Length: 288
Length: 333
Image (cartoon, rainbow over the protein chains, first blue to last red):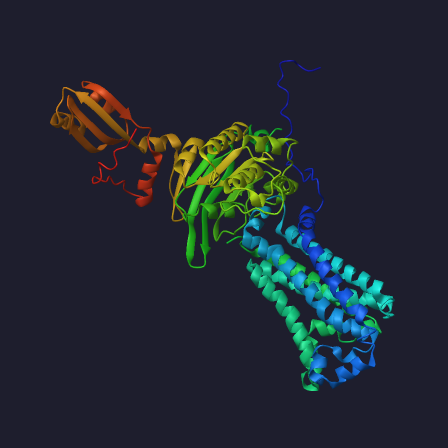
């Protein structure tokens, strides 16, 4: 029985609003990063597909022919070693030298470095990162979700490459081992991802896209150059140990199968670079 | 929706502060952007910061949002230390950057949906209502929009989730006068709904119309914080009068005795004399001085806040009155 004149007790203090806000998209930063770049994913896929479809059908007349082998034998050994053309005669060697070791590596690295450099460095440079970070997200979320988008985009390109090579496997007379091909494709993805993550990290460190591109390109180009130099003479072979490119392709994974630990190491390295990116971004003044 | 500030703090004796900044110092290398800036913005008020470009307005906004880290000092936003204010607090904040850059390749609607995804919940229809008010076409690609229309997108973005606190850096830049008025209405509505607005500008008129309190910032220091009314009292009015049956000498003599009157120019006319002058301070003595005159015309302008603030920009300690160019400064009414 309450006295009608009694003032009802004050309600309990309102709780601080918990993180219960309705969100229409889970992982909004990730989703945005992915949907924003569907065009470039498409174009890079077309580029890789074109490379695969131009090179592989030529294997029976080029790589597999004695004439071609004689031509290659007549070239300077330094040149063939640099281009990895010394194994052009076999199907795994041909696919490795043309696609994985050269044009595929080039295209995938360019795509990954471009994406990585733009994801944070480019976004900050344009002034858009400032506005995103003023919203209900943490810097770590932004870094991690954009890294995940980079991983997905790189893996899409790897998948396109893998599937197309698989499709040409019989028609071009390659007869590659499917699981070796998968392993090598994932190694290519790991290589691209390490360069792309380096670009992401350098972009986050400096807030400039161009430094991101520089950092990523340094990893990709030096990896290639160290491998090529290491191939030349035993004196320079130690350079192999500095080359991600050599770590991935030095043991002919298409011929011998990819080493599982090497694969793990590549993706682990990308994760470490992602963590470094998140840590760096957390410390910095943004947009100055 | 009851606002947190109303519910938890409505029963306390002192009104809560939406922003409390204490001795903010920010150095970029050897340049000092903020030299110990302190101010308090009461919840539910509009607080304006005016100052020339480079005075530190943007640096204050960025440091409040923890986009940049203070060299020393601390700030509290909505009761939380700015360094510890996480996503939950930032969802209750709307921000409009001074140099607004928006992604160009998507439509305005999709862009706003993205920002809605990472901010507080946006009521259904709210985005369209705001876009209608500003006559903004949300289905056009952002890249094709004019600067003013991009700015409108930025404003909608800041207001759409009805945040408790709005940080608006140069909010009306690029807007035409009609849209500036619409923006000021939006600000007043937000304040009436209990939201707090912190806005910066180098255009004094918009602060004058919108703000309850104004801080004047120069070279990283707050020169003065005053209510708009107090600032108005120190402001300079331009006046012009015409009287018949009086000579120039007598009119000059009568007016020069009025406190706060400056830049007096008297000219003879056919039937009497005409005077133009500036007046700062109280208007009463002036009215008394001219009461006996046979006035045929009297114009006293709205006090010009810009002019009084500009004198503060020039010199923080003294307000100079320029005696030369007095003819050139005669104001057309």
